[in-house]
Length: 310
Image 1 (cartoon, one colour):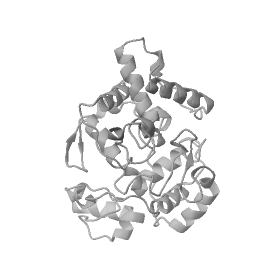
Image 2 (cartoon, helix red, strand yellow):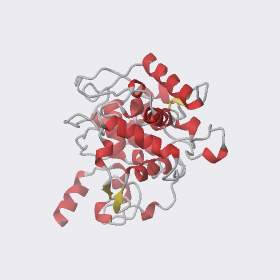
Image 3 (tube, rainbow, N blue to C red):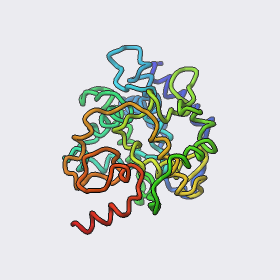
Image 4 (cartoon, one colour):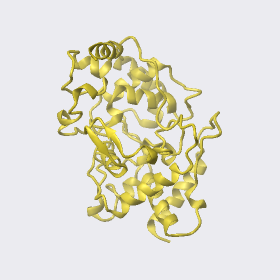
């Protein structure tokens, strides 16, 4: 049995030991790649699943060959794409293939699925892009395509659910209290996460040198708050959240205020400034609102001003 086969089987056993919380909507699928008939396609999909669940070991710092160190931290793709992209509102991959190619405001151009995967490697994984013809990126795309084949007609659940925007700025100090009450047990007093004995993390670091960099989507407050509210702490669901909306925004503000790797060249992101997200925490902007308001909110005044200017 190949090394990646051992890894994916270990990941499946781990997933069964820690089942995901039950969802009220039982129609959301959780496709099982091990159920595919034996074929080269199954092998490719399984390798893609292994890459998502064990990124650090196959193309990250723990990879045996230095030339395979594409991910720059020891996170796994499944650190954010929960249950290897199968969890509803856990940044699921289900249905994602059908969304590409698509226009991406960050680059101000159409991007395909492999380019989107590489964007995550360069930002969330703080690493470098895989060659677009590599076995690894083809396998990850094959796995995402496999999940997409099971997409329900109602795709409500692919990303993170929208939240009402607080009328006040998020408060990192209040967020510190939320973190101490709800997050510290898994993610550590210093956001360092909890490491597995065999490498990688049982619970990922939220800041520090082994976390996502400042160009990652999770470094934007609205994006982070939505994900946290729908999925955290462990056991929470979008139907039965543990945190209030304001707590989610406050703790996201606290987490994103902590040190992490810097992504160079962020001033080149969103070349059409009118399409830059209101919570992008770096200049330049197409408006006169202060950087602090883009970082912490409140966001509705920015949104209203943009609508008025259209």
